[in-house]
Length: 305
Image (cartoon, rainbow, N blue to C red; front, side, top):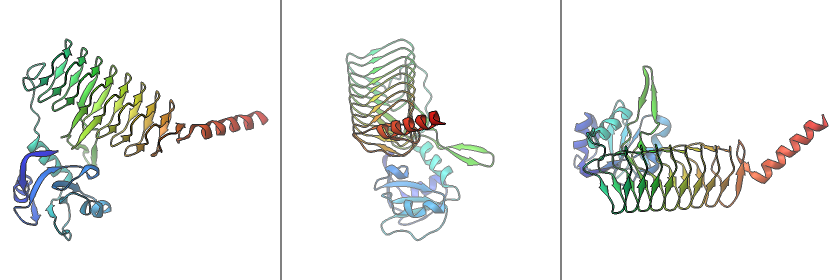
């Protein structure tokens, strides 16, 4: 999530009321999670296991719960609760603004686009040309939709990421400050749910077609010309490369990559990253030919008994 203008280390420290290490005028451009950080970003870390990863990441400001040696060219924000303070920063720069109308006055809707009754379009949404948005679709704030996109009834774009920290009193949600980007010529079936990124974008690229009742988790990137069948659940931070086919009732782990041109057969559990250009089946996932051989062998053994 980029700020509308560059902030200083001192200004951010004042917002969250914490100590800092580094030049007070050190420039900060935004906040991001560890897997998408860039130069100028803040990243947070609250467990010693991940200190080195955060300190050595592309992020140039680290929101951390312990005083450590500051890497050269970087700055530290010292917080007793980085998770809480990361949320404070998100809320400060991207506050929730309630809508009072079905289609926000700040929304931009392209020529030839049809918006059916009972559609909700939030603040600062951009919809391209010649789209069809069917009844009861909900499009949350900041969502970007390209040209020639079809979205069927009851689909939701931009709900919060499913991301919680367990505390003694219950679960504390990491506030989502990212968005959803749908590129040109994408079709989304009925009752799909595409969660927005925590700090970046959940992206569905050009020409991809998604069936009914598919869930896409936060910060996931789906490539061009993919086919995804119904009742598939894709976790957060997944990368699906171009021209992947995923058949019905597939589920994935978070943080994995599915290579270009892979085919995932129905009811497979994608428990790890898989290479492109091959067909896969089963849980745990294996190449489909090998998995089917194993199942045939097991069937023979059972018959012999």
